[in-house]
Image (cartoon, rainbow, N blue to C red; front, side, top):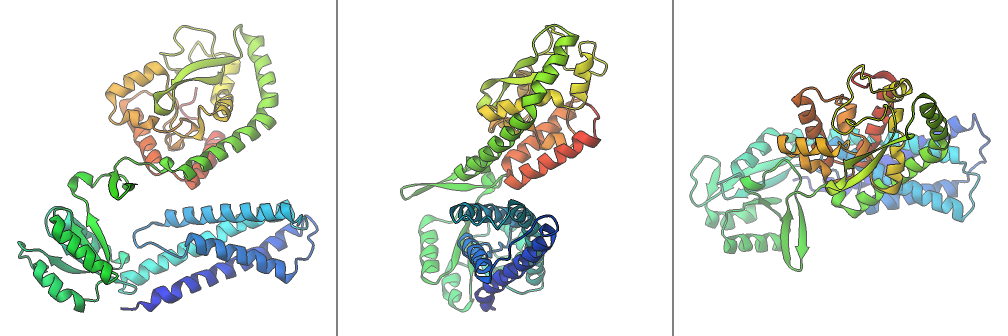
Length: 456
Protein backbone atom coordinates (compact mmCIF):
# COMPACT_ATOMS: atom_id res chain seq x y z
CA UNK A 1 0.00 0.00 0.00
CA UNK A 2 1.36 3.43 -0.94
CA UNK A 3 1.48 4.93 2.52
CA UNK A 4 4.09 7.42 1.37
CA UNK A 5 1.24 9.35 -0.26
CA UNK A 6 0.24 10.90 3.09
CA UNK A 7 3.87 11.68 3.83
CA UNK A 8 4.41 13.82 0.75
CA UNK A 9 0.92 15.06 -0.12
CA UNK A 10 0.70 17.79 2.59
CA UNK A 11 3.99 19.29 1.39
CA UNK A 12 2.86 19.26 -2.24
CA UNK A 13 -0.49 20.74 -1.22
CA UNK A 14 1.15 23.60 0.71
CA UNK A 15 3.63 24.21 -2.10
CA UNK A 16 0.69 24.62 -4.46
CA UNK A 17 -0.89 27.08 -2.01
CA UNK A 18 2.32 29.17 -1.97
CA UNK A 19 2.50 29.25 -5.78
CA UNK A 20 -1.16 30.28 -6.06
CA UNK A 21 -0.75 33.02 -3.43
CA UNK A 22 2.34 34.26 -5.27
CA UNK A 23 0.29 34.54 -8.47
CA UNK A 24 -2.47 36.25 -6.49
CA UNK A 25 -0.04 38.86 -5.12
CA UNK A 26 1.32 39.61 -8.60
CA UNK A 27 -2.21 39.94 -10.01
CA UNK A 28 -3.25 42.19 -7.12
CA UNK A 29 -0.18 44.38 -7.54
CA UNK A 30 -0.88 44.70 -11.26
CA UNK A 31 -4.55 45.63 -10.78
CA UNK A 32 -4.21 47.97 -7.79
CA UNK A 33 -1.16 49.83 -9.15
CA UNK A 34 -3.37 51.17 -11.94
CA UNK A 35 -5.46 53.09 -9.43
CA UNK A 36 -3.20 53.92 -6.47
CA UNK A 37 0.52 54.23 -5.86
CA UNK A 38 1.88 51.12 -4.13
CA UNK A 39 5.10 51.27 -2.18
CA UNK A 40 7.47 48.45 -2.95
CA UNK A 41 7.30 45.64 -0.42
CA UNK A 42 10.59 44.06 0.54
CA UNK A 43 11.05 40.30 0.26
CA UNK A 44 10.97 39.78 4.04
CA UNK A 45 7.46 41.26 4.19
CA UNK A 46 6.30 38.95 1.39
CA UNK A 47 7.95 36.11 3.29
CA UNK A 48 6.09 36.98 6.50
CA UNK A 49 2.84 37.08 4.50
CA UNK A 50 3.43 33.53 3.26
CA UNK A 51 4.64 32.22 6.63
CA UNK A 52 1.45 33.40 8.35
CA UNK A 53 -0.61 31.59 5.70
CA UNK A 54 1.42 28.37 6.01
CA UNK A 55 1.18 28.34 9.80
CA UNK A 56 -2.56 28.99 9.66
CA UNK A 57 -3.47 26.31 7.10
CA UNK A 58 -1.16 23.81 8.81
CA UNK A 59 -2.87 24.48 12.13
CA UNK A 60 -6.30 24.17 10.48
CA UNK A 61 -5.15 21.07 8.54
CA UNK A 62 -6.50 22.31 5.23
CA UNK A 63 -4.41 19.69 3.44
CA UNK A 64 -6.64 16.91 4.77
CA UNK A 65 -9.08 16.26 1.95
CA UNK A 66 -11.65 13.83 3.32
CA UNK A 67 -12.57 10.77 1.30
CA UNK A 68 -16.29 11.37 1.67
CA UNK A 69 -16.41 15.19 1.77
CA UNK A 70 -17.80 17.15 -1.17
CA UNK A 71 -16.38 20.13 -3.04
CA UNK A 72 -18.55 22.61 -1.12
CA UNK A 73 -16.88 21.56 2.13
CA UNK A 74 -13.46 22.24 0.56
CA UNK A 75 -14.57 25.78 -0.38
CA UNK A 76 -16.12 26.36 3.05
CA UNK A 77 -12.89 25.38 4.77
CA UNK A 78 -10.92 27.68 2.46
CA UNK A 79 -13.30 30.54 3.20
CA UNK A 80 -12.70 30.07 6.92
CA UNK A 81 -8.93 30.08 6.44
CA UNK A 82 -9.03 33.27 4.35
CA UNK A 83 -11.26 34.95 6.93
CA UNK A 84 -8.81 34.08 9.70
CA UNK A 85 -5.82 35.06 7.55
CA UNK A 86 -7.01 38.55 6.72
CA UNK A 87 -8.19 39.09 10.29
CA UNK A 88 -4.61 38.39 11.43
CA UNK A 89 -3.15 40.56 8.63
CA UNK A 90 -5.53 43.41 9.56
CA UNK A 91 -4.48 43.26 13.21
CA UNK A 92 -0.79 43.31 12.24
CA UNK A 93 -1.50 46.06 9.70
CA UNK A 94 -2.84 48.28 12.48
CA UNK A 95 -0.36 47.20 15.15
CA UNK A 96 2.74 47.86 13.01
CA UNK A 97 1.19 50.75 11.07
CA UNK A 98 1.98 49.08 7.75
CA UNK A 99 -0.02 51.67 5.84
CA UNK A 100 1.93 51.11 2.62
CA UNK A 101 -0.45 48.12 2.30
CA UNK A 102 -3.58 49.93 1.15
CA UNK A 103 -7.07 48.79 2.04
CA UNK A 104 -7.73 48.36 -1.67
CA UNK A 105 -4.71 46.09 -1.96
CA UNK A 106 -5.93 43.86 0.88
CA UNK A 107 -9.49 43.76 -0.48
CA UNK A 108 -8.45 42.87 -4.04
CA UNK A 109 -5.94 40.34 -2.74
CA UNK A 110 -8.62 38.67 -0.58
CA UNK A 111 -10.90 38.34 -3.62
CA UNK A 112 -8.17 37.01 -5.91
CA UNK A 113 -6.96 34.54 -3.26
CA UNK A 114 -10.49 33.25 -2.73
CA UNK A 115 -11.01 32.73 -6.45
CA UNK A 116 -7.61 31.25 -7.33
CA UNK A 117 -7.33 29.04 -4.24
CA UNK A 118 -10.91 27.79 -4.78
CA UNK A 119 -10.01 26.72 -8.32
CA UNK A 120 -6.76 25.14 -7.11
CA UNK A 121 -8.21 23.26 -4.15
CA UNK A 122 -11.30 22.00 -5.94
CA UNK A 123 -8.99 20.82 -8.75
CA UNK A 124 -6.87 18.96 -6.18
CA UNK A 125 -10.04 17.46 -4.69
CA UNK A 126 -11.21 16.29 -8.13
CA UNK A 127 -7.75 14.89 -8.94
CA UNK A 128 -7.71 12.96 -5.66
CA UNK A 129 -11.11 11.45 -6.37
CA UNK A 130 -9.96 10.40 -9.83
CA UNK A 131 -6.75 8.95 -8.43
CA UNK A 132 -8.64 6.97 -5.80
CA UNK A 133 -11.25 5.73 -8.28
CA UNK A 134 -8.42 4.21 -10.32
CA UNK A 135 -7.03 2.32 -7.34
CA UNK A 136 -4.56 4.81 -5.86
CA UNK A 137 -4.39 6.01 -2.26
CA UNK A 138 -6.77 3.25 -1.16
CA UNK A 139 -7.47 1.93 2.33
CA UNK A 140 -8.23 -1.72 3.13
CA UNK A 141 -11.40 -2.28 5.12
CA UNK A 142 -13.48 -5.11 6.54
CA UNK A 143 -16.92 -5.20 8.12
CA UNK A 144 -17.47 -7.21 11.31
CA UNK A 145 -21.08 -8.41 11.46
CA UNK A 146 -23.20 -8.71 8.34
CA UNK A 147 -26.69 -7.94 9.62
CA UNK A 148 -28.63 -4.67 9.57
CA UNK A 149 -27.12 -1.83 7.55
CA UNK A 150 -23.73 -3.49 6.92
CA UNK A 151 -24.86 -4.65 3.49
CA UNK A 152 -25.74 -1.09 2.43
CA UNK A 153 -22.32 0.17 3.49
CA UNK A 154 -20.60 -2.55 1.47
CA UNK A 155 -22.64 -1.54 -1.57
CA UNK A 156 -21.51 2.07 -1.11
CA UNK A 157 -17.86 0.94 -1.10
CA UNK A 158 -18.41 -0.99 -4.29
CA UNK A 159 -20.26 1.78 -6.14
CA UNK A 160 -18.19 4.76 -4.95
CA UNK A 161 -14.65 3.86 -5.97
CA UNK A 162 -13.68 7.53 -5.54
CA UNK A 163 -13.82 7.01 -1.76
CA UNK A 164 -10.73 4.86 -2.10
CA UNK A 165 -12.03 2.15 0.28
CA UNK A 166 -10.92 -1.34 -0.77
CA UNK A 167 -13.57 -3.59 0.80
CA UNK A 168 -12.04 -6.98 1.61
CA UNK A 169 -15.19 -8.67 2.93
CA UNK A 170 -17.24 -9.55 6.03
CA UNK A 171 -16.47 -11.52 9.15
CA UNK A 172 -19.58 -12.99 10.68
CA UNK A 173 -20.27 -16.19 12.64
CA UNK A 174 -23.64 -16.87 10.95
CA UNK A 175 -23.35 -15.55 7.37
CA UNK A 176 -22.15 -17.82 4.58
CA UNK A 177 -22.34 -15.47 1.56
CA UNK A 178 -19.56 -15.21 -1.03
CA UNK A 179 -18.16 -12.00 0.51
CA UNK A 180 -17.92 -13.52 4.01
CA UNK A 181 -14.31 -14.43 4.75
CA UNK A 182 -15.13 -16.35 7.92
CA UNK A 183 -16.19 -15.96 11.53
CA UNK A 184 -14.75 -13.79 14.31
CA UNK A 185 -12.15 -16.43 15.16
CA UNK A 186 -10.97 -16.31 11.55
CA UNK A 187 -10.71 -12.53 11.74
CA UNK A 188 -8.26 -12.56 14.68
CA UNK A 189 -6.25 -15.29 12.97
CA UNK A 190 -6.01 -13.55 9.59
CA UNK A 191 -5.91 -9.87 10.53
CA UNK A 192 -2.12 -9.63 10.93
CA UNK A 193 -1.53 -10.48 7.30
CA UNK A 194 -4.22 -8.23 5.82
CA UNK A 195 -2.52 -4.81 5.99
CA UNK A 196 -5.79 -3.48 7.38
CA UNK A 197 -6.61 0.24 7.78
CA UNK A 198 -10.29 0.36 8.68
CA UNK A 199 -12.62 -1.88 10.65
CA UNK A 200 -16.37 -1.23 10.48
CA UNK A 201 -18.33 -2.82 13.33
CA UNK A 202 -22.02 -3.58 13.13
CA UNK A 203 -23.75 -2.01 16.14
CA UNK A 204 -25.47 -5.35 16.92
CA UNK A 205 -22.16 -6.98 17.82
CA UNK A 206 -21.97 -7.99 21.49
CA UNK A 207 -20.05 -5.63 23.77
CA UNK A 208 -17.20 -8.00 24.82
CA UNK A 209 -16.35 -8.79 21.17
CA UNK A 210 -16.56 -5.12 20.24
CA UNK A 211 -14.13 -4.19 23.05
CA UNK A 212 -11.75 -6.96 21.98
CA UNK A 213 -11.70 -5.67 18.38
CA UNK A 214 -11.19 -2.05 19.49
CA UNK A 215 -8.35 -3.09 21.80
CA UNK A 216 -6.62 -4.93 18.95
CA UNK A 217 -7.14 -1.97 16.61
CA UNK A 218 -5.65 0.46 19.14
CA UNK A 219 -2.59 -1.72 19.51
CA UNK A 220 -2.09 -1.92 15.75
CA UNK A 221 -3.08 1.63 14.70
CA UNK A 222 -6.21 0.59 12.86
CA UNK A 223 -9.21 2.93 12.78
CA UNK A 224 -12.52 1.54 14.01
CA UNK A 225 -15.96 2.89 13.03
CA UNK A 226 -19.36 1.71 14.26
CA UNK A 227 -22.17 1.36 11.70
CA UNK A 228 -25.37 2.93 13.12
CA UNK A 229 -28.53 0.88 12.76
CA UNK A 230 -31.48 1.72 10.55
CA UNK A 231 -33.07 4.01 13.16
CA UNK A 232 -30.04 6.32 13.02
CA UNK A 233 -29.56 6.28 9.24
CA UNK A 234 -31.33 9.63 9.01
CA UNK A 235 -31.12 12.51 6.52
CA UNK A 236 -28.88 14.56 8.81
CA UNK A 237 -25.37 14.64 10.17
CA UNK A 238 -24.78 13.03 13.54
CA UNK A 239 -22.52 14.49 16.19
CA UNK A 240 -21.57 13.38 19.68
CA UNK A 241 -21.52 14.82 23.19
CA UNK A 242 -19.26 13.55 25.95
CA UNK A 243 -20.36 13.38 29.59
CA UNK A 244 -17.22 12.31 31.42
CA UNK A 245 -16.42 8.93 29.87
CA UNK A 246 -19.94 8.50 28.48
CA UNK A 247 -20.88 9.43 24.88
CA UNK A 248 -24.32 10.17 23.47
CA UNK A 249 -25.37 10.78 19.84
CA UNK A 250 -26.82 14.19 19.01
CA UNK A 251 -29.43 13.08 16.50
CA UNK A 252 -30.86 16.49 15.56
CA UNK A 253 -27.82 18.75 15.93
CA UNK A 254 -27.50 21.58 13.39
CA UNK A 255 -24.44 23.62 12.31
CA UNK A 256 -25.65 26.70 14.22
CA UNK A 257 -25.50 24.76 17.49
CA UNK A 258 -21.75 25.39 17.22
CA UNK A 259 -20.75 28.55 19.11
CA UNK A 260 -18.20 29.66 16.48
CA UNK A 261 -20.79 29.35 13.72
CA UNK A 262 -23.33 31.36 15.74
CA UNK A 263 -20.79 34.12 16.43
CA UNK A 264 -19.77 34.23 12.74
CA UNK A 265 -23.37 34.53 11.56
CA UNK A 266 -24.22 37.15 14.19
CA UNK A 267 -21.11 39.20 13.33
CA UNK A 268 -22.11 39.19 9.66
CA UNK A 269 -25.68 40.21 10.60
CA UNK A 270 -24.50 43.13 12.73
CA UNK A 271 -21.97 44.45 10.20
CA UNK A 272 -24.37 44.15 7.25
CA UNK A 273 -27.41 45.60 9.02
CA UNK A 274 -25.35 48.39 10.62
CA UNK A 275 -24.05 49.39 7.18
CA UNK A 276 -27.60 49.47 5.75
CA UNK A 277 -28.92 51.38 8.77
CA UNK A 278 -26.25 54.08 8.63
CA UNK A 279 -25.97 54.54 4.87
CA UNK A 280 -29.48 53.69 3.64
CA UNK A 281 -32.18 53.72 6.33
CA UNK A 282 -30.90 57.01 7.74
CA UNK A 283 -32.30 58.84 4.69
CA UNK A 284 -34.81 56.27 3.44
CA UNK A 285 -37.03 56.27 6.54
CA UNK A 286 -37.68 60.06 6.49
CA UNK A 287 -38.20 60.11 2.71
CA UNK A 288 -40.46 57.05 2.45
CA UNK A 289 -42.23 58.07 5.66
CA UNK A 290 -43.12 61.44 4.14
CA UNK A 291 -44.49 59.81 0.96
CA UNK A 292 -46.59 57.35 3.01
CA UNK A 293 -48.01 60.19 5.13
CA UNK A 294 -48.83 62.33 2.08
CA UNK A 295 -50.95 59.55 0.53
CA UNK A 296 -52.85 58.12 3.50
CA UNK A 297 -53.38 58.57 7.19
CA UNK A 298 -51.75 56.13 9.58
CA UNK A 299 -48.33 55.17 10.90
CA UNK A 300 -45.16 55.02 8.77
CA UNK A 301 -44.36 51.51 9.95
CA UNK A 302 -46.57 48.46 9.84
CA UNK A 303 -45.71 46.43 12.95
CA UNK A 304 -46.80 42.81 12.79
CA UNK A 305 -46.40 39.96 15.28
CA UNK A 306 -44.48 37.05 13.76
CA UNK A 307 -42.90 33.85 15.05
CA UNK A 308 -39.13 33.87 15.46
CA UNK A 309 -36.47 31.58 16.92
CA UNK A 310 -37.94 28.86 19.16
CA UNK A 311 -41.39 30.19 18.16
CA UNK A 312 -40.84 33.34 20.23
CA UNK A 313 -43.15 36.10 18.99
CA UNK A 314 -41.50 39.38 17.97
CA UNK A 315 -42.57 42.65 16.36
CA UNK A 316 -41.60 42.60 12.68
CA UNK A 317 -41.13 46.02 11.06
CA UNK A 318 -42.20 47.00 7.54
CA UNK A 319 -43.00 50.23 5.77
CA UNK A 320 -46.79 50.49 5.70
CA UNK A 321 -47.93 49.67 2.17
CA UNK A 322 -51.69 49.33 2.76
CA UNK A 323 -54.44 51.50 4.08
CA UNK A 324 -55.11 50.54 7.73
CA UNK A 325 -57.43 47.48 7.77
CA UNK A 326 -58.54 44.67 10.09
CA UNK A 327 -57.32 41.82 7.83
CA UNK A 328 -53.61 42.53 7.55
CA UNK A 329 -52.66 39.57 9.77
CA UNK A 330 -55.00 36.98 8.27
CA UNK A 331 -55.48 37.89 4.59
CA UNK A 332 -52.46 37.74 2.26
CA UNK A 333 -51.93 40.48 -0.29
CA UNK A 334 -53.19 39.48 -3.74
CA UNK A 335 -52.74 40.87 -7.24
CA UNK A 336 -54.48 44.27 -7.60
CA UNK A 337 -55.34 44.21 -3.89
CA UNK A 338 -57.46 47.36 -3.20
CA UNK A 339 -55.85 47.75 0.24
CA UNK A 340 -52.43 48.49 -1.27
CA UNK A 341 -51.64 52.20 -1.71
CA UNK A 342 -49.85 53.69 -4.71
CA UNK A 343 -46.60 54.19 -2.84
CA UNK A 344 -47.24 50.76 -1.30
CA UNK A 345 -47.38 49.17 -4.76
CA UNK A 346 -43.94 50.57 -5.53
CA UNK A 347 -42.53 49.53 -2.14
CA UNK A 348 -43.87 45.99 -2.44
CA UNK A 349 -42.80 45.50 -6.07
CA UNK A 350 -39.23 46.51 -5.18
CA UNK A 351 -39.28 44.80 -1.73
CA UNK A 352 -38.33 48.15 -0.17
CA UNK A 353 -41.19 47.69 2.30
CA UNK A 354 -38.99 45.03 3.98
CA UNK A 355 -36.04 47.41 4.54
CA UNK A 356 -36.93 48.31 8.18
CA UNK A 357 -36.36 44.65 9.05
CA UNK A 358 -32.64 45.45 9.08
CA UNK A 359 -33.47 47.12 12.41
CA UNK A 360 -34.94 43.77 13.54
CA UNK A 361 -31.64 42.17 12.55
CA UNK A 362 -29.64 44.80 14.42
CA UNK A 363 -31.53 44.24 17.69
CA UNK A 364 -31.31 40.44 17.31
CA UNK A 365 -34.86 39.34 16.43
CA UNK A 366 -33.95 38.36 12.87
CA UNK A 367 -31.00 37.42 10.70
CA UNK A 368 -30.05 38.56 7.19
CA UNK A 369 -30.58 35.01 5.89
CA UNK A 370 -32.98 32.47 7.32
CA UNK A 371 -36.53 31.11 6.95
CA UNK A 372 -38.97 33.93 6.22
CA UNK A 373 -41.22 34.57 9.26
CA UNK A 374 -44.97 34.16 8.85
CA UNK A 375 -47.75 35.88 10.76
CA UNK A 376 -48.90 34.20 13.97
CA UNK A 377 -52.29 33.07 12.52
CA UNK A 378 -50.63 31.68 9.37
CA UNK A 379 -48.07 29.96 11.54
CA UNK A 380 -50.74 28.19 13.57
CA UNK A 381 -52.49 27.03 10.39
CA UNK A 382 -49.38 25.70 8.65
CA UNK A 383 -48.08 24.05 11.82
CA UNK A 384 -50.99 21.60 11.81
CA UNK A 385 -50.86 20.95 8.05
CA UNK A 386 -47.18 20.69 7.10
CA UNK A 387 -44.78 18.03 8.38
CA UNK A 388 -41.63 19.43 10.06
CA UNK A 389 -43.04 22.95 9.80
CA UNK A 390 -42.02 23.88 13.34
CA UNK A 391 -38.42 22.82 12.64
CA UNK A 392 -37.94 26.05 10.68
CA UNK A 393 -38.05 27.94 13.99
CA UNK A 394 -34.82 26.36 15.25
CA UNK A 395 -32.96 29.47 14.09
CA UNK A 396 -33.73 33.17 13.65
CA UNK A 397 -35.95 34.08 10.71
CA UNK A 398 -34.37 36.01 7.85
CA UNK A 399 -35.01 38.97 5.57
CA UNK A 400 -34.23 36.59 2.71
CA UNK A 401 -33.76 32.85 2.52
CA UNK A 402 -33.02 29.82 0.38
CA UNK A 403 -36.71 29.34 -0.47
CA UNK A 404 -36.98 32.93 -1.69
CA UNK A 405 -34.01 32.72 -4.09
CA UNK A 406 -35.38 29.40 -5.40
CA UNK A 407 -38.57 31.16 -6.51
CA UNK A 408 -40.92 30.51 -3.58
CA UNK A 409 -41.81 34.04 -2.53
CA UNK A 410 -44.91 36.19 -2.41
CA UNK A 411 -48.48 34.93 -2.14
CA UNK A 412 -49.10 31.27 -1.21
CA UNK A 413 -51.82 30.01 -3.56
CA UNK A 414 -51.26 26.24 -3.73
CA UNK A 415 -50.25 23.78 -0.96
CA UNK A 416 -47.07 22.73 -2.80
CA UNK A 417 -45.71 26.27 -2.45
CA UNK A 418 -45.64 26.23 1.35
CA UNK A 419 -44.42 22.62 1.38
CA UNK A 420 -41.55 23.57 -0.92
CA UNK A 421 -40.69 26.56 1.27
CA UNK A 422 -40.58 24.40 4.38
CA UNK A 423 -38.47 21.74 2.65
CA UNK A 424 -35.92 24.34 1.49
CA UNK A 425 -35.89 26.03 4.91
CA UNK A 426 -35.24 22.66 6.53
CA UNK A 427 -32.37 21.98 4.12
CA UNK A 428 -30.86 25.39 4.88
CA UNK A 429 -31.00 24.80 8.64
CA UNK A 430 -29.41 21.36 8.38
CA UNK A 431 -26.67 22.46 5.96
CA UNK A 432 -25.96 26.07 6.96
CA UNK A 433 -22.61 27.60 6.13
CA UNK A 434 -21.29 31.15 5.90
CA UNK A 435 -20.65 30.53 2.21
CA UNK A 436 -24.31 29.59 1.71
CA UNK A 437 -25.40 32.83 3.37
CA UNK A 438 -23.12 34.86 1.09
CA UNK A 439 -24.48 33.03 -1.97
CA UNK A 440 -28.10 33.63 -0.95
CA UNK A 441 -27.44 37.35 -0.37
CA UNK A 442 -25.85 37.64 -3.83
CA UNK A 443 -28.74 35.77 -5.47
CA UNK A 444 -31.26 37.93 -3.60
CA UNK A 445 -29.71 41.11 -5.00
CA UNK A 446 -29.92 39.61 -8.49
CA UNK A 447 -33.54 38.53 -7.95
CA UNK A 448 -34.53 42.04 -6.83
CA UNK A 449 -33.23 43.40 -10.10
CA UNK A 450 -34.51 40.81 -12.58
CA UNK A 451 -37.32 38.73 -11.09
CA UNK A 452 -40.39 40.51 -9.74
CA UNK A 453 -42.95 37.70 -10.29
CA UNK A 454 -45.41 36.94 -7.47
CA UNK A 455 -44.52 40.17 -5.65
CA UNK A 456 -47.47 42.54 -5.23
